[in-house]
Image (cartoon, rainbow, N blue to C red; front, side, top):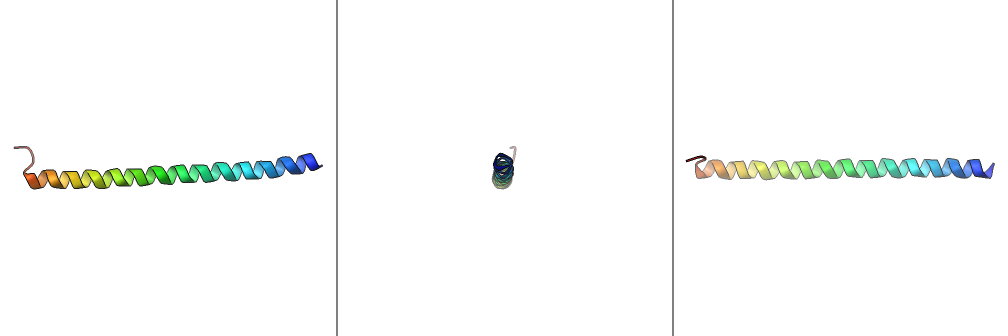
Length: 54
């Protein structure tokens, strides 16, 4: 009985850890994509201000 309880609790904590790690990974990737988008918009703006392809 204690073994089943221990395995159940371990499974719940493992699932929580995996869910938390996945959540953190997804949000980290989203922040990096947003940062890259801002950088590309800024570089495009600078390029257009300089006159583009002359």
